[in-house]
Image (tube, rainbow over the protein chains, first blue to last red):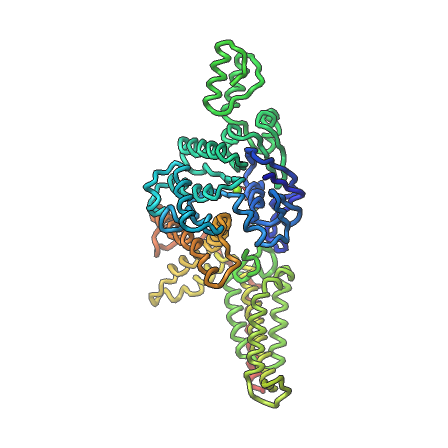
Length: 291
Length: 267
Ligand SMILES: Nc1ncnc2c1ncn2[C@@H]1O[C@H](COP(=O)(O)OP(=O)(O)OP(=O)(O)O)[C@@H](O)[C@H]1O
Ligand SMILES: [Mg+2]
């Protein structure tokens, strides 16, 4: 499912003294199967933008096209409901949405809302719980007895269970340890490859964004400031800095190392492993690059 | 989502009314409400209406915003008016619609009660629209301070009130966020039978309460670990300061009270 925003503008509390413009005439498109990261300063409109993609907020003006659905300021709730089955959304701190008595019935909440019979929903729930790497025995436990990291996985299972064609993650790794972050992102990566889904990741973590995504979209003050593959975006360091963003750590170190040895290279390392390989390759005198 | 309710909202501003001492505003509104219930003459009501209009224009609250926020109240007022109109059987019968007869007393009674209600709502929202909740709490606390002598835990009540007020926006935000998260999973709060819609709120209320209790617990721990003690004599960060203007406004509303009282006795 392709996603396309045209002149998308969103104003919160329009017509009151508290009016605030979150998005201003945003044009962008995301192709089916793409892995896109949206980055930007706090308050730049990232969350507002992605919430349009499954109709949680409606445009003040302009439109959003998701597959065959078009969302405008007057689109009816009835039209939006089926769209939410295809577009899954994992909010920041998704564990705050858990409510049911057992993990499996909580995970089954989505499919049941979309009319899947209870037995079938529970079956799918157990599969989703397995997919996120939780042991089967948690199925019948209360979600509130799980650890923080397990709760987050359970909550994400509650979204994956609907087999969305587009998965939106709003800062999914906030507040978990680096190891947990890596596991979570790898789990998403594996899921994406199985289901060939589109993934839209909102994050503050440049490294994460660069490592996993095909394309970066940088938001600034409610507009798209830059969009392109990680290397092209990171090539323009000055622009990044003017937007209040920094290069990923691995890149900064790589640049320093290159400068130190007076060498130049085309490819860029994202993440620790790639960085180590790059440096290793350079020191051994091989050609820079191929990772 | 909650944008059409203005009761309890605060609009930042620099008007004369914004600048008044919260204690003065509280007393003025209180006296004004007494006036509303003393008033029983057309002239009195006109004076009171003018007073409210004056306050409104001095406060510089945007009129469109204000009217929008009154929509819900307007329904209540209209219903009240209609009830009195048809239920009161006093004075001359004016006309009848079907089995309902409208009497002169009904019109008077209905008009008076709904005008009272309207002025009351506008005046109290003038107070809350121009005073931060915290300033209001401080004002209330110092007005009730004398009650401490009789063992009333004024300070604790004020603290409870300011904490609750502080967390109302947080709770609203949280509610919106959880509702969105459940809507993203296909929850439907707008359609279906009443029972269904009420039931749909369980997945919102459970996480909301869990969050609220957690937060209360954390707040209590944070306060205790910083050595908070309820009764301790503490100074204030926000000083209240009663000026000539406050006395003047208070005098106007008291003068109004005398007029309204006199009109009532004379009638
Ligand atoms: N529910 C809301 N009501 C009113 N204004 C809002 C609301 N949500 C966001 N805003 C405003 O809209 C703007 C964009 O907010 P948004 O949440 O989209 O930013 P963000 O890029 O996701 O930020 P962060 O990185 O902090 O999550 C901000 O100025 C914010 O204050
Ligand atoms: Mg956000």
